[in-house]
Amino acid sequence: MKKILVLEDESGIRSFIAINLRRAGYEVIEAESGEEALQMLDQNRDTRLALLDVMLPGIDGFEVCRRIRATGSNIGIIMLTARSQEMDKVTGLMTGADDYVTKPFSPAELTARVDALMRRSGGDAPAEDASELVQGPFTLNTRSHTLSKNGQPVKLTQVEYAIMKLFMENPDKPLTREEILDMVWGQDYFGEVKIVDVNIRRLRLKIEDDTAAPTYITTVWGLGYRWQA
Ligand code: CA
Image (cartoon, rainbow, N blue to C red):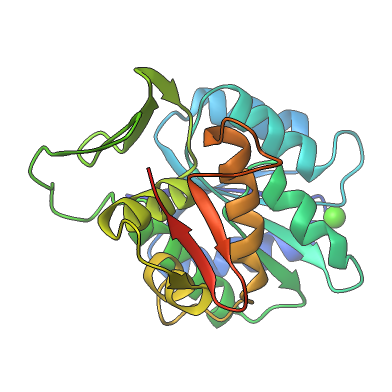
């Protein structure tokens, strides 16, 4: 079964989330502190996705996210943020989260986000033929979902990988932010286009020679982005 970790210190909200995810067919493990969440993930290596509340006593959700990514894990991560914490979205994504859900949310919205991220993570997708896209110094392996630059591995989140794949399948072609959102997040995604910009910013930090003057992912003003390698 597809295992999800729910990290939330408020037990009422945590069980509300857990009940709804179980109803949707997921196996749920629950943690009430960041420390406990990290320990549980270590003991449950088959966990596919983590829902991390931001506001916690002890280490906060961002720090938990950072530490998960620091282990090299590429599990799906969705941050749970409060409506008043607009900046949380950007901060969360910069620390390596794939998506965020703003409280209060409906069970349907949460389940839709979780389903979408699960689909993207490719666990249920039929295995693709081993193939490599090679452009400039970059090699994207679509079986292992890995990227290397000049032979050196570049650690990517699932969303970053999906963006790279889209770019490398459409070299030199300007893509609008809406197209990227549709192709990477899915047409049923009900988030904002801003999430594209934040992910591109993070991707540039990982792949550009000079982040201040990007040459691989260039901005097409008033339109979106273009990949050239
Ligand atoms: Ca909380």
